[in-house]
Amino acid sequence: DAGVTQSPTHLIKTRGQQVTLRCSPISGHKSVSWYQQVLGQGPQFIFQYYEKEERGRGNFPDRFSARQFPNYSSELNVNALLLGDSALYLCASSLVVADYGYTFGSGTRLTVV
Amino acid sequence: GEDVEQSLFLSVREGDSSVINCTYTDSSSTYLYWYKQEPGAGLQLLTYIFSNMDMKQDQRLTVLLNKKDKHLSLRIADTQTGDSAIYFCAEKSNQGGKLIFGQGTELSVKP
Image 1 (tube, rainbow over the protein chains, first blue to last red):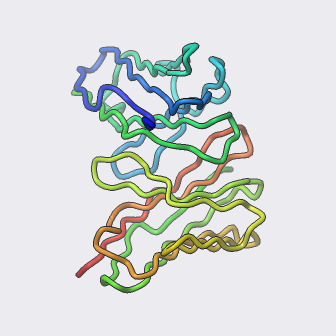
Image 2 (cartoon, each protein chain N blue to C red; image 1 turned 135 degrees about the vertical axis):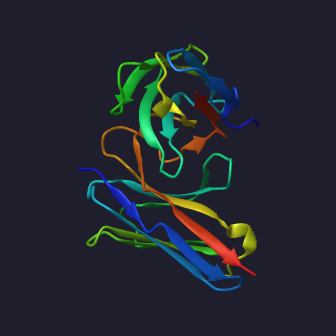
């Protein structure tokens, strides 16, 4: 069985641009969460989606948005990129919202120049 | 508030035991986790413990939970060079499914 898959694995963007990151959860998992991990720090919660609805939001500006599709895959969008948005973006899937088992993907490494 | 703290570095000799410590603040946390991250990789779930347990053992890993002191530890027996990585402690918030992570402890295993 495939695990959590994220694409792309790496990308480089210029300040002010917009970026879309993609995540496919484990088959059967209905909840997807997004985390930002800045170098040298632990992951910070951005969003959680379940059944296409937002179920939680972290302390991130409105430049960050996400959505979940009927097949439970998800996209994270970041507008007006800043240098400080450079980070590893991790997606985690779980069966339901308050599940105990969270499986993470390998992440997308975003570099903003 | 929600906060998880860990010491930043730990160095051990191959074959020794490693103990990584973590403190958390949310007394209503239901699950606590240990994740491992190797360079350039995502997070690998090592083990988790439910908040009504004191201890959990899984092969070389032993997790101890002291709810009174809000202290969690991970003991790795017979530490190997392949255990060198960053280890993250995390608690599951009582607000839905949000995980709150510590800064990570970098474990260095010397031969």
